[in-house]
Image (tube, helix red, strand yellow):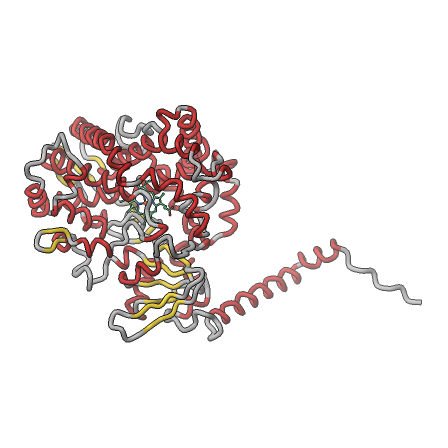
Length: 519
Ligand code: HEM
């Protein structure tokens, strides 16, 4: 009798699979699978098939990856061209839509009463580690509400009014340091503002400033270190392996270059250290000392890992953003003497030693300058999608001729760098024109509601009041104390103009930069 064939062992199967023929077969199967998925994506069976956009973008994520990862942060401009060609709603990748109509903002970015999830594909940009468990990086609406709910009261307008004197002191210290170092030659004012904003938020959140204003010179500062974080953003989004490696990054940080080492040290050592100190010294401890006592946050949400993520995120979100707005204000006040002259007339009668945020925001022209700066330099220049989990959204074009039903569960977003350039709402959008924000010399609050610099709805910026407080006080101090003695140094509008993004605006040369010289 013939012997039965021996069943293949695991070793046999692995050896066959790893042979050249096996590997070729696996690769072909994988390619066939990808082609099948791409064909489905552009077929009439896909729920987004009726939405306009280039077929290649609808077919595969490789198109987005090519512009954002390989060409670095260039997909924003491609999306803008899609809108020019296809209209206000476009399909920008297999699963995501983009809307260029600011009148639809409140539907996409709805308030807390309507469920809006974030989308993991976009959150992958934040990589791994403690920052991935922050409120900002939370996908589900319900968990986000718990996380943000516990933090919101620390950033209310009333709370910021109590903090105002500290912000003013820090702003005056920055101005003193600028004047004291005038003889040392030109410097990048953006770096000075990075020091200011990082010290304000760390003093408030942890009970002590990080010491950037007090140090000699303006660099390095927190923004210097997090550049490596932003640089890796799109690689992280499109590269699973990169994300996996990032999980073990803290163990490898010492071998990955100075910036990565420092940013890892901030996230995993310095900030947990501040938080521990804050908790041990509740009188000085402020946000984190109170947060660990708060019964709004469940105990399992109070781990050091998660708290240090939130602490790191305050610095990440609250440093470069506000500094960029202040930098743009400084640039235009120096580049456009007529704007500066009108501003000084508007600030007439104020005592630069006793500035008050609530009085400054009542000055219409300053209000207009601040909002025009937020329009052209919103903190986050990358799109941020929301998912209406359980409702279809209905969009009607402005002329009322076309209606789109966006199926529930579809990620859809907007991009400030596209939507703030809507020529119907902001004629000649490339020009810096504070006057566009005034009606009969008074603030146009209706137009302000349209701005998405701070995002909108349940996921909007938690630090908006702090940012306004910092911007009004620092801008006024610059106008009174620094600008009468300052000139731009080897700086043109190109140095603050959007070319691409690493989540935040990048110019052709990299980060925005405005060099000034004080006499
Ligand atoms: C001009 C200054 C600022 C601008 C333009 C800005 C802009 C934004 C935007 C657009 C978002 C929403 C991001 C998204 O949709 O994914 C956001 C979120 C956030 N911002 Fe800001 N920001 C500024 C200053 C600050 C400051 C000073 C802080 C300090 C605490 C801060 C903390 C945060 C946090 C924690 C979030 C996440 C909120 C959440 O839980 O959903 N931001 N910011």
